Image 1: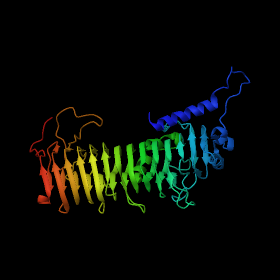
Image 2: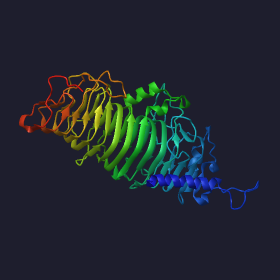
Image 3: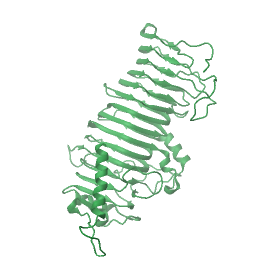
Image 4: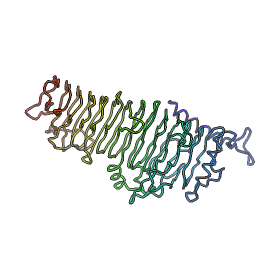
Length: 469
């Protein structure tokens, strides 16, 4: 059991015992029940005037509970209910905002501990709904924007932001956790920074995000994103006034799911988005750029699955990734932009979908693909990997073919010709290349425009006739 799992289990036990267990002795009609109080470190927002009917504004009552807990620390309890918030909340140091959803919820039913913010419609630069300081957590809640409409999607500020109090110059925010949270229709989801922060833990977060999912910046000590799934499903059900087609289209056109600015090692594992304009985006902010390791990550129905604009020299390591793009936007799983430098490593990753290219490399980077799989559902003469600059290594990879008559979700059942685009193009400005030990459905072809600057050996030759299976 992980520490996070133990903490969630402990919280559930504390709440159960403190609210339900009878006093010692036999129960009777007049027997009292233990009730958690601030003296126990539990601050129930109902005791501070919150109503939870989805009609009355509960912002001030919740903030009063937070402020009361801040003197000694503790849990601000969000019971079952629909808690309307017309303003924003500041989670003070040492305070934990906890609902009763001990795991992320599905898109129905609309039950449990549900926070309903309304502030900031049309204002992306408005305060975040929940601002978190050091040593805080938000757990066990569903967050739903009741005024956001699928017919007229409008910008909102961030739902949750981890940062120092701007009024306290030099303050940093460390060890803040967001766990077991469901975001139904956040325009901008969760942000760290732009003030210095570290050891953020964003884990077991599910939901629909529309414009930006998670943005990481100015993380000076290792941050962690784990077990996160963004999906159009979560705002597709009538219970939250959703619509599958409209939400899918908006996300695929606009969403940047995971954005990484400055982070001095970011550990990302078991994350996924469907759909998105960009799945994972690496950028430069005023604070710097990212390095880190990414394992078991995925992006489906994207225009670009991984977009690298800038990274630190140490670069990024991506292992066991699965990336699918559609014939929308840039229609390429991996794009490295001009100006990018540093190291990018893809190990044991799969790339498929109807795309123009699997990868386009335009930066002055060291990029490698090892033990990867490339395929394309389009009948195209464009190269799977288009290398325009930098240095590249492609080793022990497979360039697969696609049977257009294959039923989705099933393997081919009989021998048929399969589509395989041309494999690798090394443009004249590529500094060097090592292409070694690769195979393909029809073999591997390389268009080499850099001559002896390329080492090309041990690849399966192209077959003149279609192979049989």
